[in-house]
Image 1 (cartoon, one colour):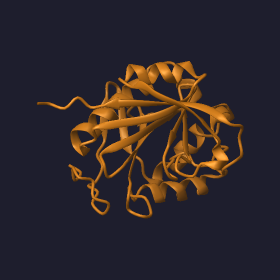
Image 2: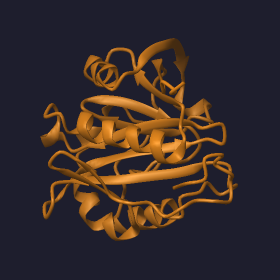
Image 3: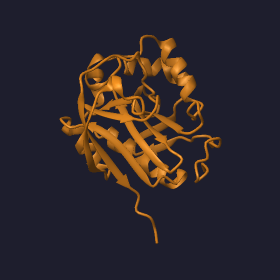
Length: 219
């Protein structure tokens, strides 16, 4: 298991997870070629602050950094899983940024052809259960654009509730610079952690609803 106090310098090796017919594989640089195709559809980026990854080489370099599982300053644990059916091309990925206080920002990206099939719900639930059981995470956070009802419904299926609504401008916010799309939705994560990293681009202001899920602790 990961250290339950999530000290900045200690990260145990990730393991694969299962979610029904899906397998969640710890993301490594070797996934770049397969994921590049999944992340190249421009439809995915309607609500993102960056375009698709420009090259496979760029994506491989991003994944090599994420594969270290720690932010550069050692203050955050970065966890990413590629989601697929055994032996098939990736459907997308799920990811979490775990903070020292055992709070985790979560997000997901799935290929357009796999939207609306429940894959994000299955994979997201498996990730949340793993983070609670193995990493001691007690509070999960996600932010979604207010008009994207499908992502709001997804988060609600995973047990999240609305916490607050805030205006946000992508070019003026450094703490929440990691942005993810999935199920026609839009999620944000803190710092520079995003496994589908492209080149940042300016976008219009967005209104976000922060969603929170708190783990029910046993007495």
